[in-house]
Amino acid sequence: MSVLLRLALFAFACTLAASVEAQVVTRRHVSQAMATTIAATALAMCESKGYRISVVVVDRSGETIVAIRGDGASPHTLENARRKAYTAMTFRRSSAEFAKELETAPSRRQQATLPNVIGIAGGLPIKVGEEIIGGGGVSGSPGGNDEPCLQAGLDKVADQLK
Image (cartoon, rainbow, N blue to C red; front, side, top):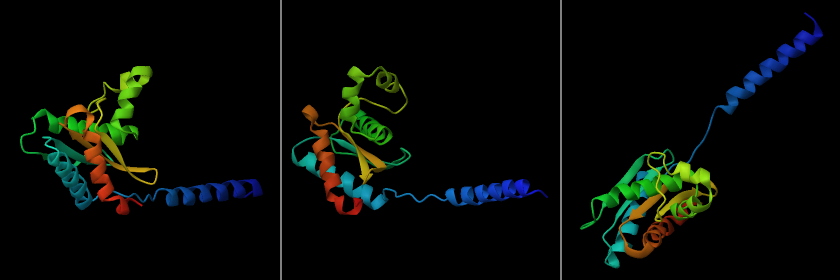
Protein backbone atom coordinates (compact mmCIF):
# COMPACT_ATOMS: atom_id res chain seq x y z
CA MET A 1 0.00 0.00 0.00
CA SER A 2 1.44 3.37 -0.96
CA VAL A 3 2.24 6.04 1.59
CA LEU A 4 -0.24 8.37 -0.06
CA LEU A 5 -3.04 5.82 0.20
CA ARG A 6 -2.20 5.16 3.86
CA LEU A 7 -2.29 8.88 4.62
CA ALA A 8 -5.65 9.21 2.86
CA LEU A 9 -7.09 6.28 4.85
CA PHE A 10 -5.70 7.73 8.09
CA ALA A 11 -7.27 11.13 7.32
CA PHE A 12 -10.58 9.43 6.50
CA ALA A 13 -10.50 7.47 9.79
CA CYS A 14 -9.77 10.66 11.72
CA THR A 15 -12.68 12.39 10.03
CA LEU A 16 -15.02 9.54 10.98
CA ALA A 17 -13.82 9.59 14.58
CA ALA A 18 -14.23 13.37 14.80
CA SER A 19 -17.71 13.29 13.29
CA VAL A 20 -18.87 10.66 15.79
CA GLU A 21 -17.72 12.87 18.66
CA ALA A 22 -19.33 15.91 17.06
CA GLN A 23 -22.75 14.23 17.08
CA VAL A 24 -23.15 14.51 20.85
CA VAL A 25 -25.04 17.68 21.71
CA THR A 26 -25.87 18.97 25.15
CA ARG A 27 -28.80 21.36 25.39
CA ARG A 28 -30.49 23.18 28.21
CA HIS A 29 -34.27 23.13 28.42
CA VAL A 30 -37.05 24.97 30.20
CA SER A 31 -38.23 22.62 32.91
CA GLN A 32 -41.91 22.21 33.70
CA ALA A 33 -41.28 23.74 37.15
CA MET A 34 -39.58 26.79 35.62
CA ALA A 35 -42.31 27.20 33.01
CA THR A 36 -44.96 27.01 35.71
CA THR A 37 -43.19 29.65 37.80
CA ILE A 38 -42.87 31.99 34.80
CA ALA A 39 -46.53 31.54 33.86
CA ALA A 40 -47.91 31.82 37.40
CA THR A 41 -45.88 34.96 38.12
CA ALA A 42 -46.94 36.62 34.85
CA LEU A 43 -50.58 35.73 35.51
CA ALA A 44 -50.44 37.05 39.09
CA MET A 45 -48.87 40.34 38.01
CA CYS A 46 -51.43 40.97 35.28
CA GLU A 47 -54.33 39.93 37.50
CA SER A 48 -53.12 42.29 40.24
CA LYS A 49 -53.65 45.11 37.72
CA GLY A 50 -57.12 43.84 36.81
CA TYR A 51 -56.09 42.33 33.46
CA ARG A 52 -57.72 39.12 32.28
CA ILE A 53 -54.98 37.32 30.41
CA SER A 54 -53.67 34.01 29.19
CA VAL A 55 -50.03 32.96 29.36
CA VAL A 56 -48.13 30.22 27.53
CA VAL A 57 -44.55 28.95 27.83
CA VAL A 58 -43.04 26.88 25.01
CA ASP A 59 -39.85 24.84 24.87
CA ARG A 60 -36.96 25.24 22.43
CA SER A 61 -38.90 23.33 19.75
CA GLY A 62 -42.05 25.42 20.13
CA GLU A 63 -44.08 22.83 22.00
CA THR A 64 -46.29 24.08 24.83
CA ILE A 65 -45.06 23.29 28.33
CA VAL A 66 -47.58 25.37 30.30
CA ALA A 67 -50.74 27.16 29.17
CA ILE A 68 -53.01 29.06 31.55
CA ARG A 69 -56.17 30.88 30.60
CA GLY A 70 -56.88 33.20 33.49
CA ASP A 71 -60.33 33.73 34.93
CA GLY A 72 -62.39 35.88 32.61
CA ALA A 73 -59.82 35.89 29.79
CA SER A 74 -61.27 35.84 26.31
CA PRO A 75 -60.96 32.51 24.50
CA HIS A 76 -58.66 33.90 21.77
CA THR A 77 -56.05 35.06 24.30
CA LEU A 78 -54.75 31.53 24.87
CA GLU A 79 -53.99 31.01 21.17
CA ASN A 80 -52.49 34.49 20.83
CA ALA A 81 -50.24 33.90 23.85
CA ARG A 82 -49.05 30.61 22.37
CA ARG A 83 -48.27 32.21 19.03
CA LYS A 84 -46.43 35.11 20.69
CA ALA A 85 -44.30 32.63 22.66
CA TYR A 86 -43.58 30.61 19.52
CA THR A 87 -42.66 33.73 17.54
CA ALA A 88 -40.27 34.97 20.23
CA MET A 89 -38.59 31.56 20.48
CA THR A 90 -38.37 31.03 16.72
CA PHE A 91 -37.05 34.45 15.75
CA ARG A 92 -34.85 34.92 18.85
CA ARG A 93 -36.37 38.30 19.68
CA SER A 94 -39.45 39.74 21.31
CA SER A 95 -42.63 39.47 19.31
CA ALA A 96 -42.78 43.31 19.54
CA GLU A 97 -39.44 43.53 17.71
CA PHE A 98 -40.71 41.04 15.14
CA ALA A 99 -43.84 43.18 14.68
CA LYS A 100 -41.74 46.31 14.06
CA GLU A 101 -39.67 44.45 11.46
CA LEU A 102 -42.89 43.62 9.57
CA GLU A 103 -43.08 47.27 8.57
CA THR A 104 -39.60 47.45 7.04
CA ALA A 105 -38.43 44.00 6.01
CA PRO A 106 -40.27 42.21 3.16
CA SER A 107 -38.89 38.84 4.30
CA ARG A 108 -40.44 39.34 7.74
CA ARG A 109 -43.84 40.00 6.16
CA GLN A 110 -43.52 36.69 4.35
CA GLN A 111 -42.44 34.92 7.56
CA ALA A 112 -45.52 36.27 9.33
CA THR A 113 -47.60 33.98 7.13
CA LEU A 114 -45.93 30.87 8.58
CA PRO A 115 -48.07 28.71 10.89
CA ASN A 116 -47.95 29.73 14.56
CA VAL A 117 -46.23 33.09 13.91
CA ILE A 118 -47.81 36.38 14.95
CA GLY A 119 -46.56 39.96 14.87
CA ILE A 120 -48.07 41.28 18.10
CA ALA A 121 -46.20 42.43 21.23
CA GLY A 122 -46.30 40.20 24.30
CA GLY A 123 -43.83 37.39 23.55
CA LEU A 124 -40.27 37.09 24.86
CA PRO A 125 -37.57 34.52 24.23
CA ILE A 126 -36.27 32.59 27.22
CA LYS A 127 -32.47 32.64 27.16
CA VAL A 128 -29.50 31.20 28.98
CA GLY A 129 -26.83 33.63 27.85
CA GLU A 130 -27.44 33.85 24.10
CA GLU A 131 -28.90 30.34 23.85
CA ILE A 132 -32.67 30.32 23.28
CA ILE A 133 -34.26 27.59 25.38
CA GLY A 134 -37.91 28.57 24.97
CA GLY A 135 -40.37 31.41 24.76
CA GLY A 136 -43.20 32.94 26.73
CA GLY A 137 -46.29 34.80 25.63
CA VAL A 138 -49.01 36.80 27.34
CA SER A 139 -52.21 38.03 25.73
CA GLY A 140 -55.20 39.99 26.97
CA SER A 141 -53.98 43.11 28.75
CA PRO A 142 -54.87 46.51 27.36
CA GLY A 143 -52.41 48.87 25.73
CA GLY A 144 -49.30 46.72 25.46
CA ASN A 145 -49.04 45.61 29.08
CA ASP A 146 -48.52 41.93 28.22
CA GLU A 147 -44.73 42.07 28.02
CA PRO A 148 -44.12 43.61 31.49
CA CYS A 149 -46.18 40.82 33.07
CA LEU A 150 -44.17 38.19 31.23
CA GLN A 151 -40.92 39.93 32.12
CA ALA A 152 -41.90 39.65 35.80
CA GLY A 153 -42.14 35.88 35.30
CA LEU A 154 -38.73 35.76 33.65
CA ASP A 155 -37.26 37.91 36.43
CA LYS A 156 -38.59 35.42 38.96
CA VAL A 157 -36.42 32.64 37.46
CA ALA A 158 -33.47 34.82 36.36
CA ASP A 159 -31.09 33.08 38.80
CA GLN A 160 -31.82 29.76 37.01
CA LEU A 161 -31.10 31.25 33.59
CA LYS A 162 -27.40 31.87 34.17
